Image (cartoon, rainbow, N blue to C red):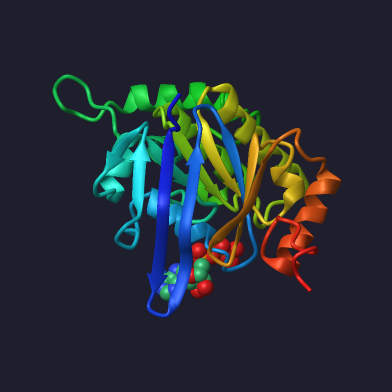
Length: 259
Ligand SMILES: Nc1ncnc2c1ncn2[C@@H]1O[C@H](COP(=O)(O)OP(=O)(O)OP(=O)(O)O)[C@@H](O)[C@H]1O
Ligand SMILES: [Mg+2]
């Protein structure tokens, strides 16, 4: 089966800085890909190309379900079903929960009037099912500004799944979260898998990525240093490989050729 999304020979330079160099990267159907790499490795740049925020340098190609996308704009990416979840910026703090769920995709009745009661009812349903909110203090009318980082993450992922996103990209979703919230966030990622969709999960912490990723891709200074499938490597093995990448820039064993 074709990959959901595939980048072929993608480079991105910002003036003198080569943020990405000849990157081949893909995400399969119902696959969770962990994207690891140090600060400045190019992870966010890769994401911004997939969401249409940046255009790759000439020569790079992007395919969606096997079809070449000539110009991936932000609007086109969203149409295709690519959603990004950032911890910050994901929600409108001053707005109630239901508005945040339906922002930009409001439901209206047959007279074109916003259907507030259905949006509230749908939100309440999602709260108890998908989001797992149990607190009586939270309702569809609660303003999200007071939600915890984990709850905000949950709202953003629930929204993406509700609108049938095919590919959900999480750029460091656990940053600044407590341990319990981090676990919850990881559960949400598993929920994406269960819903039959795909995800890219970016995190600095391999202990977060390893349990949920079907495949892990390591970026180093703008290039793909290596990748492996789950089961190919234990967590200890992964840690060892990552320190090799940090030392040599590659997952391959060059010790015999280097002298
Ligand atoms: N808009 C931009 N203009 C100039 N340079 C940029 C821009 N965006 C990214 N870069 C540079 O490209 C390189 C890759 O940055 P990127 O943000 O993709 O890294 P990252 O892997 O997401 O890092 P982090 O883990 O710190 O988020 C860095 O050297 C960065 O300074
Ligand atoms: Mg980044």
